[in-house]
Structure formats: structure tokens, C-alpha cells
Image (cartoon, rainbow, N blue to C red; front, side):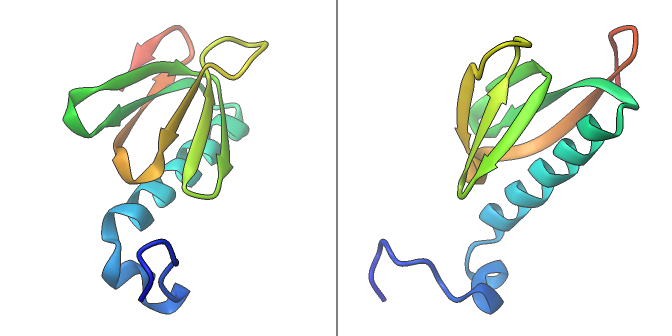
Length: 95
């Protein structure tokens, strides 16, 4: 198999668990942001990095584009680096 070729979708979860986990977390965060129940999300990445106060999230293949400011995209991350998402409730309460 070519190193730059994606594995077949049915086997992707078995071969790349981190990629599918990151995608699932990003989709859940995107749904929570779209529901209006929360103010923002904090994304925790491998290696201890954190992107706090994400207001918008857009998925583009294996990359997520993030907006921490209301008028522009401020960050881009690889989905296989995403390991945890925390919600920021209205009023800035993190849980």
C-alpha cells in the first residue's frame, strides 16, 4: 500500500484508530456548537497543547479549521492529534 493512500473506509477504524477518534470528537464538538447549548469548546491535543475558546469548527478531510475569534479562522489542527474536547457553558463555566 502506498504511504500516501488512504486505507479502505471499512478498515480505517482498525488501521487508524486515532484518526477516527479525532474525527468523532470533532464532529461531536461541531454538533454541540451548532446546538446553541454551549458557548465554546476547548480542544486538547496530544503533547499537552490546548486550543481554548473555539467558537466555530470546520472539518476539511483530516484537518479541522478553528475560529477562536468570531470573524476569522485562527487555527488549523490535524484530527489525529485531537484527544479530548471540553465544553464551555454559557457564562464561561468549563466542564
